Image (cartoon, rainbow, N blue to C red):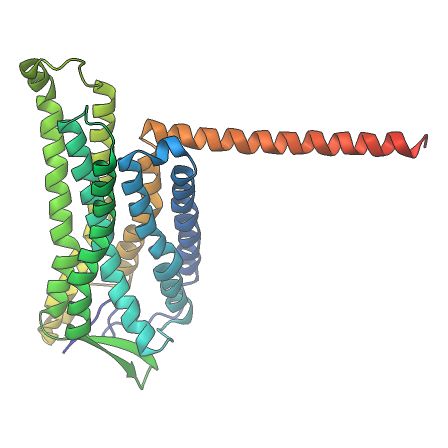
Length: 338
């Protein structure tokens, strides 16, 4: 059996000195959890409450990505912060294995959600004059649901059959023990394979963008597709794929390195996987759900929706102040001279 290297075992493997104080990291992760929920939640509200934005298939796929990221801020990050504050995992083995499965599942689903967003954008680039109809909405619904189904189908069996949660009697902390090669397969299935698909799709979008002027002339399209909208789609596709893949890449490389080192106990000290290394790569991975909401602002309609919400909120506040002032004046006029 092979030890897990996620927070269910602590920040670092047990061969390293046990950490005693991570107050600064704890505060950083609590702040990150709050920001992740706020930023992604505001994007969800912005899109769902604005009919003109909600009708666009790409924006519903953006909502799907935001929902995936909320899992980090609402569930994974608080448990991770608790383990940092306590110095060990203090919850029961059931919560321990649920965290492990949710961690890998969230990575798989969120990366697949970005991939399907890129698929939808590539379809738009290839057929920019396609009208939005019931078939398009059904296809969008399928692309929203499919990452969750596929992610659960891929990750859940590997975690259930390949790992077991045990309570360490000495440290009273939960540990995940993996069968040989199961955790490695889980890492490739949950991150590296979806990440590869997302990057390939991003490359296709760039190639299409470069070749687009030539293809338009050859096909004699009338009217010619809006170059600015195409540029916007390619920009968002590149930013979302790079953010989703590159910010998680260091963590999973370090995790793979630790797994390979554990196969030979004598080489553990040669790996150089210090507590600082684990803290940095985990913090970089946690930046992804906090940065991703800014990527969607590259869409002009999403930006306009935010401006509209801000204007409406400002107008409501202004009307409320006027109403309060009028009520105060009415009260003073009825109360007579002071």
